[in-house]
Image (cartoon, rainbow, N blue to C red; front, side):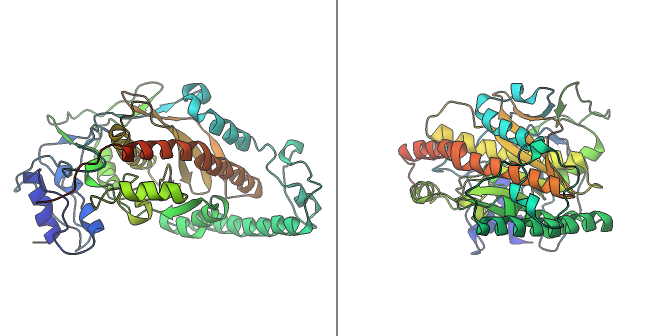
Length: 436
């Protein structure tokens, strides 16, 4: 029997078992054991409160390395968090549902902490002052369908070196546009889109001295922050319904069960992470020293362990399943909220979690939503909020303005908030990590 399967079985029957690495391999491996396999394969269905999705029948093993636990023959008990965690004294509750809520007046539906970012993104949405004035003087450059309000004011202090840089960036934009349109024509896969197009956009437009882009398709949620399953009766046969004005992740359809099974294995694609300054880095390093899966986010994936990541990006193709993308974002943001609540509880903070943007990309089209801490639930508030596209020059300059607004928010409001959260958490008496 695979050692990971043995470990998963031990944890299901012994909630006091810590996340010790029995294999002698990296600690990340044991932290990333996927306990969803054991829960999703139960003969008697279990319900996921956040997001509340029903589960599929037994899935097939995808790889030889994929641990298999036969839950019909294995005793099962809920997975609990490791004791004496510096970040939390008990496993966070995921009984708060995640609800996707369309809003006609999105700004009014958002807390005030998101208004400045929202306003900046609306400016990008309407293409206001997104085009550098230097582009007007480039011979042979065609920018179809431009309007006067799209152009920035000419800056008399701009030197020739700056103008050359602007022209060079426009050339790189043209290369991305060609790759994007080619990917659409060839019907490339999601992974191919990510490598051919999306990564280049993010690395060129979203990276600053303190913001970095990470491919997080290999990241997994640490066990104590994974959405919990609670025992329930078998789901009825009727299909789930959605209420007017909102979309909840509650659904009993067989398609949803399949989507949930896939979603817990394949998480979101990219994250924008904050590269902490020296002071913040020192605080986070002390906070995440113990246990081995301690993290300032919801995953122990090493690039995100000590670098706060408030912005997550889910990509899909035109043929992709929108519901699956929503489920993946819902699970990921629910786990992130769980991690933030754990940190805030540690520091004695009783307040709303900061509102964060979520980005969905469908081939070349980029849209944004907002994850709102609504107390009794996590609301994903949205409308058709396009912030750019990679199929033409106007869309690329839209994206440049939108991603600039998001990185400024990360370096400003978000950095201030997360610094306060981790500082308060570290200031509290630490639970001893000594093991007998």
